[in-house]
Image (cartoon, rainbow, N blue to C red; front, side, top):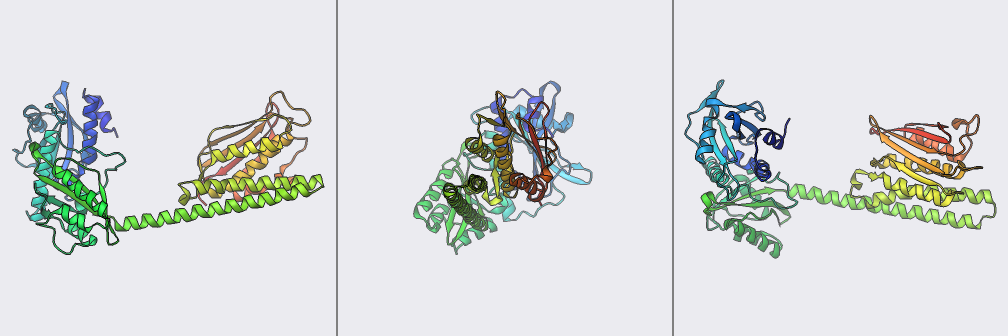
Length: 497
């Protein structure tokens, strides 16, 4: 489906600032839709044809939709869009029409001009279409919702809605159904929805909100006096026409998210709209996850430290051994333990440790550098082609051991007895159909005649075969490389076990 920007650029010549304003409006208009109990459709004119195209739509969460089918991308003309043309020409909200029928469903059409702040030009028209088949009894909640919706509609026509978006804020919460408080120009509560009243009861308010100063009550309830003063200031800012950033209120172990919005139809401050949402359970789970994250990172950190201690002990033992073969075996063990420690070190520093996932490219690069530094008898260049990306720890740990053995084997044995002019080992990787395809290739002297990986008695190659086919559930093949040298080709499934 085409995006709002795609449709606007295809059918109109609106300026980038106009399109950005429409994007901001579409990001915050769920509030208006829910308060109106109506679908909102954003129409822009196709000048050359006298038609309009719908570039965005939002359905209310508080009432049945007026459209079962999505209207985005639909082009309309003739009598169907006459009210949209009136709004563009006269620059006012249109409410004069009689109900229209879609099959057996009656609907009421209204239209709102969309302007940018300080601009007279109407850049789009919002259709506000209400399904009348389940007409609501005009109770207190409905009347307050509709009154507030009319105020916001006038602000859209004035160009003062939506409010500026603050850096780092999402557009998802709180919503109208979470809790709504309406304030008059003095800051007194004229209406509080049942959910809003419940949210303030969680904060410790025993009385009713209506008739009270919301800023004073909120400042008294919040545990931290400084945070309470900040919340009070944000409500006052909204009463004076500004839209402050959202604020989390904490009291008596409860957490409530608050958003204060100014009400300024025709540029006159008449009060504020305060949305609240009880997020106590959400924050409790967040704290549990943070604690779990910290615990997991600490475990990986301690495992890494223990493995480094083991490696240091083996290194000390190797220095005291007089038999070259035994010393070489201990040094190989040091490298194997160190490669596993790298995975745990990465996990201990990763912000994604709760998912037990690691950025594997850095690990491969460090293992390759260590293999060259320790094992190469000639100057060997090791490079990587492609990206491993993020891998789960259950794959990363055995895979790093396999790559450590293959790289070590290549730099130590591939270039004996005669090395080429530019000795090179290349680690190539790509993902294909939920599989990881890895190749470690060198331009050395190649495999000996009659080589068989399954029959090899070398410990390093036995480790490679066992881990590749067992732990990783993949396949591995060592073969002569076209043009000289050796390549190890490994395929590892990435699907969860």
